[in-house]
Image 1 (spheres, rainbow, N blue to C red):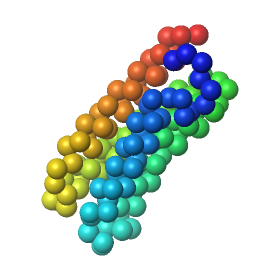
Image 2: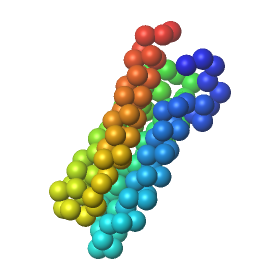
Image 3: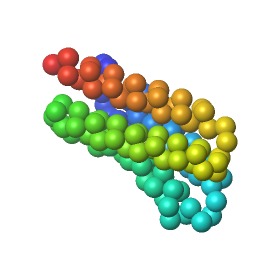
Image 4: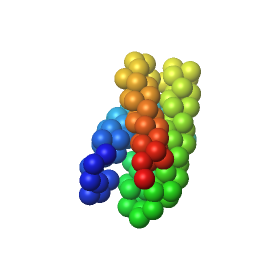
Length: 120
């Protein structure tokens, strides 16, 4: 991980930002009647991922950082679940790249948690 100046130095934060942007783009294709349902839920959960990574990185204590990373994992699970609902409702096709990005971000968050736990 090296010398961390702030959250913007973390690849996991950068990737989670890209995920949030992709979710916003995908939700533009959802039916307008979902504006207060899936669209709102997906956007809030997606924004929560990089936000929690950033907040955790700003903490002075590694234990708190890990806690915020776990919260980010919870938001990732929310986004993944809601995207599965979107697929099952046949609202949007061809969002495999979004699913792949979710998996990649999850692996990065889990890797950072392991790193923080194993390195004093």
